[in-house]
Image (cartoon, rainbow, N blue to C red; front, side):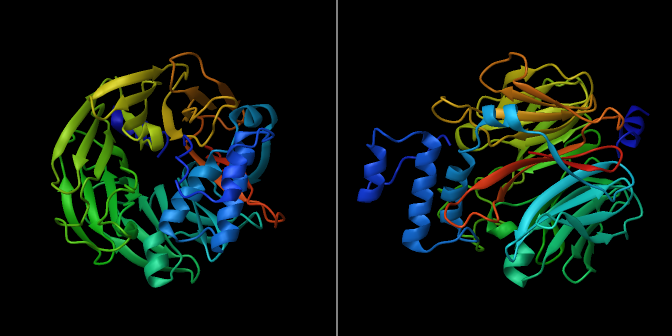
Length: 428
């Protein structure tokens, strides 16, 4: 009954500079008049783009460099001192469970899933809803954009999971449903596309206690992971491995799916977080420490590559070390369920390297920021609208390229979050 009740209530560190540096780069490295680390970052990015005539797009290795450097210029102190509610997307008539972001054909989009049983698409550049799909017969719990469809079939596709036990694929450019994945015997809660092989594989988790691994190209289930004892609510897949020589967004011949070295992380109502090897399909670690349902799990990256972040109905945010199998930190401060956790792209001014700022959204109607280096009180707190009640269900950091800036590569960082009343709030 507790499961039913809970569900019903919601339903770089700078990388080393290459040895073969240009005179231009070296000049900036040793220029004592350089004002800041972020200024240096911007100059290097502009120089690379100008030299190689490269734009931010589907160019794998360069994208990772640019995103690494671009994300490093978001200063947490600036966000804390000057950020505010800047926009609200209205349209959903019930709680917003999930938000995702992507770009297609140089256009920027947000998609959202809601308890009103709809999937909606929003044009960020024009701040308006452009599409809505209503063929689910129950709450939409998770939505994800599919890069695999875009880069292999030139289709703008969203994947959604629902309490109606289905996973559906929608072409929002042509306003049609493409596929339905049936297989789960209960509601489908979380989704995650693989970072390898161009996103060809999809993980889904369900009230039926299983995790399923699907091949998007063939629409077939490849494996079922079934060690959890109760509902599996959330899932993530370990980040892209730049040192995997076999992975160039193409198929390779390692094992069943070519997922050599990648793992799945799942959080469950059985209060555990489990790690699974995609290649062998074996469970190799179980994290125990939460005293209630696990509602959100996320893998870290960069210097937090070997960590997992989690949020729970026990009101805590926890950080885990994958290698040791131990809990590193626990962050207490939320009063109720932590629905969503994220590794933020912020750095703290005057701190060398990544500041490791994490973010959590809770049923207590707050978004809190924490420094992973300590268990001290939160760095900052954003309060949701008091009239909305029941809190913050989902979070998404989005780096938006400034439209009017033609000389420099500059980005605005916005925080999107979903509320119980159906609003998508934008903080920036």
